[in-house]
Image (cartoon, rainbow, N blue to C red; front, side, top):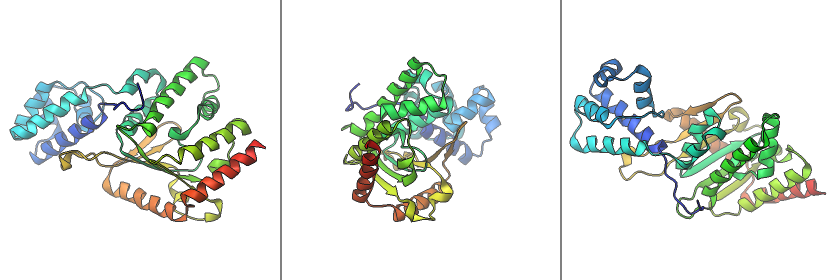
Amino acid sequence: MTSDAVTTGSILPRRILARLLRDRREKAGIGVEAARKAIGVSKQTFWRMETGQPTRINPLFIIHLAQMYGVGDETADVLLGLTEESQAKGWWHAYGDAIPKHFDLYVGLEDAAKRFSSYHTTLIPGLLQTPEYRRELHWTEFPGMPSDEVERRIELHRRRQERLHSKAKPLEMRVLLDESVLRRVQGSPEVMSAQLTHLVEASRLPNVSVRVVPLSAGRHKGVFTGSFVLLEFPRHPTAKLTEPPVVYIQGFTGALYLEKTDEVDEYRDAYAGIQRVALDEDASRGLIQQIAEELAR
């Protein structure tokens, strides 16, 4: 697959379908149990249908629910269309063995996103990591992992990075890095120097912005938020079907996805606050290059 290919997956249609099903059921004043029993599925399956989790959905279930909720023919057709789209497999499913369980959803959301805005306090974001830097992280987190499994994850990592160079489906990437990320050596000084040089080069891409929050910035919102990613999605031709933004926070044993409007707004405001104390892009490149040269000596 070339970097210009448009990837398609089930994440967005599945999430939009779930949102519509919940909305129509609630507007019809029908409880979860009544709807579930009407189509004869388990509680878990119905929960998956209404939360956008992976599950096989029989189109007949959707037809029955549409009738039960009293939706018009046009909306019913939309629901059926989304059902068909939701069953498609994204390219990343071929790497299922290399994706941690809690990370599968994130990879799909990242692939579907139009804009990626993030703040990092410990590590270079994955989309901007070199293979060597990435290997060091894998060996640190999983010291006993077989080499072939590490390389499988590196291959997945490269596939994710194709979005940065895609002409058909470019990802707008805005990154804020705490200066400590640049000075925390992963592997050897040579590996880290090469990583920082790569970061400078990537920051010159028209769709990538990298800004550094200097240690001299002192107290700011990022001290309290920690690392996070704000994912925003393409506008759907039908405005009300556009997927709302999601905030992703990665933990050691799992991940947190924040979708409530007030929560997302808080992180959006925090991001704006962190931006205000960050160096501009040129000054950031200068600092990154300076540290890279120091490490290379």
